[in-house]
Length: 226
Image (tube, rainbow, N blue to C red; front, side, top):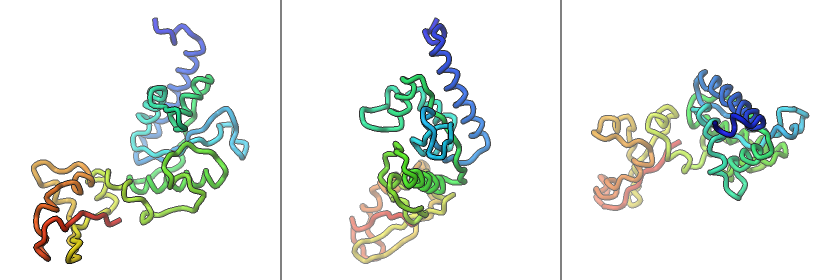
């Protein structure tokens, strides 16, 4: 028999984890991208909320899976440096279970990233020490919009996600400055469609073929238009 089934304290922690996962799955069933907050239940927040002090802001379309995975893998993925995995694992070592709270729902991946960043900055402005690692989310600054999202956050988008967010690509020539829009929907017609915007950018054909404007090779690159 597994030890946690005979150890009352382990059974208590396992039951609390299952409750958090069940709530997350119920929230996920309503659809959309979820911006969520993780709280440390050992201390109330600055308004006296007994649910706990904020320690992390995240976003996910598979909220239940994210919550379960983080509880299951935090011991292995938590590093010596500060991270959300490390904090969740430390709470378990103290006999506590991190609490998840839905902050906001967003219809698309880009709008969810904006929501996550703005909620993280709100926590920073209120004086909370959150474990978000992205520098843009740890700034004591105001809200951002889609024009301020770093390009490196967008390149991993799937094609359908980019289309949903009306993100487009341009083929640009550094020599003659020719700009050619790339119709993302046409990539679905090829035998092996690229999965992400990054795969389109990495395709060597753009540099191998000559520019239609100046006939120069190795002069073109793919750029984002957000």
